[in-house]
Image (cartoon, rainbow, N blue to C red; front, side):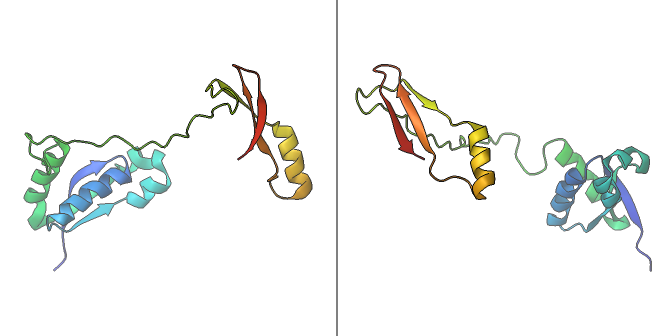
Length: 148
């Protein structure tokens, strides 16, 4: 007996289709994606081929459509009363550079010329490890070098 597939949803992007497909499979509904490789390789063909087609077996059509509608409406797996608390992204900051003379944080980092760096790189064949950062304090005028 041949398995008859029914298209229950179409998507313009393969990634959207894979997300919904994974959700349906986690609920025990076997499903298939049609034309996903065509759209993935040539995104402009999406309209011509009708997008990526999410297909399920005939006996799972009603359950699949209902679940896709719930997911697209935002009710796929969360209660409407449940609040999501997101943690702030972790950011690593370098500590401020302080002047060794006056402990001021009004310090300017002087960068080396990209031309000099590129020339040394081409000449030696590897990036120059001997370049140091140069700093100058705006408060007292002191200038110093520090290794990277």
